[in-house]
Image (cartoon, rainbow, N blue to C red; front, side):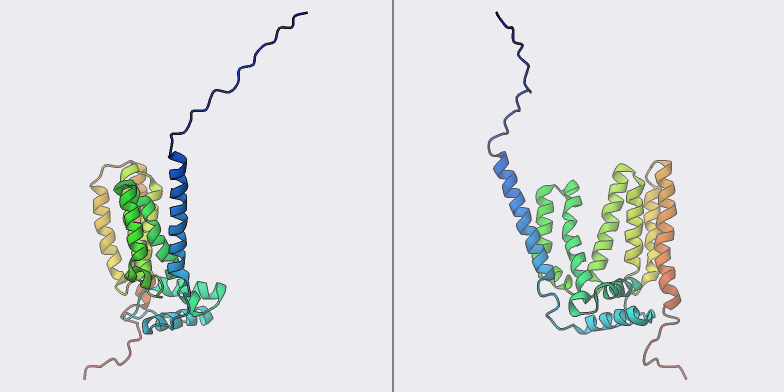
Length: 253
């Protein structure tokens, strides 16, 4: 008795990967892992071992008093509210030490290196990798990534404003405008001259109006940039130069 057997077709053959592709991926992953480890070590290794610099001691102490009793008042000789409130939150969560005082600047130092990822969209992967390597190896960037001051905050928020706004101009999505406005508002809450934020916001709004965009995105742009950037000014203005406690003030006769 002859039995007829039907052959079931198997899955289609998988095309072979080009020779050398898998080792290249493996080498790339290893390079990224080494780079990430170097970035973490350069920003966090013995972060609290060095004694606080004079500027650091002022910012650390003002953040500490804010975390304890909410006592903080804007002084034009120092910086805006973000630095002190952000560090006060860190103190509340993990305590006040030299390490925790510099924790947020170190995190923002990593974020500054991470901007290589969106930059490769316009610069290409090689130039973006070069940017990340230069920021990692820069003694100046490494030093201020381990220093409680406004430098890293200002760089990241300003860079974030530019990158997010560029993304918004390319794909016309409202989320990028919102992110740009939030970054811009936070950048305005850093320097002593916070009142310049509305002026910069006006320049950005003029650029936005000169570019034909969808009506929904235009609405989001108009409703986020102005209020958010001006909001940081309103936060600092009540504590501004008119009401600030300026030591050794000379009164006119």
